[in-house]
Image (cartoon, rainbow, N blue to C red; front, side, top):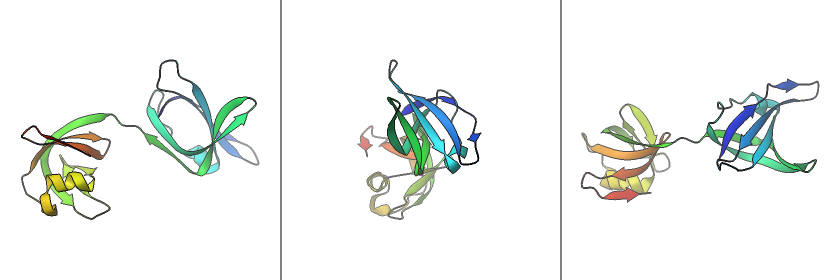
Length: 153
């Protein structure tokens, strides 16, 4: 995880296109890392300054004595969402083995199989089921039962 600090404009030459990102470690005095986004990756949407992000699948090199990253064809940028609590009625659910989700407050959340089994034993939908849960982005991470017992991933 890193914080987005600076993002250059897209530099275009006859042979290449790139954008330079400056990332900072979340620790107060932590290191910074320059990541060059090449070709089509230069056009990726970059979060605003001070946003916590994760960059996956970069190539790390030593360039003129400095460690830097370069994008690859598999590079992805993800915003690292804060965990928050939700409450509401489960309005719908999908019990497909590798793609389980529920809808709460008109929002779709991915959910792991073991949490779904806790919520709906035998994967049987129960209309009117009220929940309190922790979510991170669009992923349900913890389910809190009404009897105050907590089930974790």
